[in-house]
Length: 191
Ligand SMILES: [Zn+2]
Image (cartoon, rainbow, N blue to C red; front, side, top):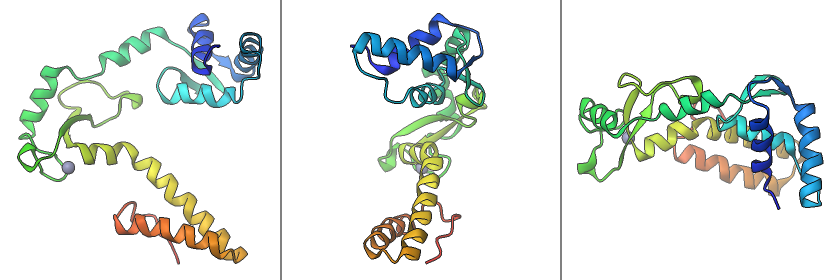
């Protein structure tokens, strides 16, 4: 039994530095998965997208992906060394640049890439900043929570139109949690 991710990686590692339309990769994946596991590959497109999100594959254009082995090595180089981390934290006064809290306040400090690695951000002192664990988490998940809030607003409006009270209550409770925690206040929820 081969797991889906391993099979997708195997395919692209066998085909390095080539722009591959998903039709070609999906056909191979479906065939091989069925052959080896005796059941169909549930959602190969999703597995490919996931590897692109993690930085293993480069999205060349819609539905076209490329695997570049050198770039993977380069990405690993883009992690800060312990020495760089120490230097960045020292420059920032051992405090989170957003809330100003430090270890004395009981928070864990982390070094973050200002420009993220997947956008080409490098491991340089200039591209590093000190964040507390909470603010680092918030930065990394900001887009995710934005998407979530927008989706629940859409669902809320639909429930309202349909007069579906149960769904409306559910969405209201979730959106109130966003408001209570001041998350994504720039996305307006009109009640
Ligand atoms: Zn902070």
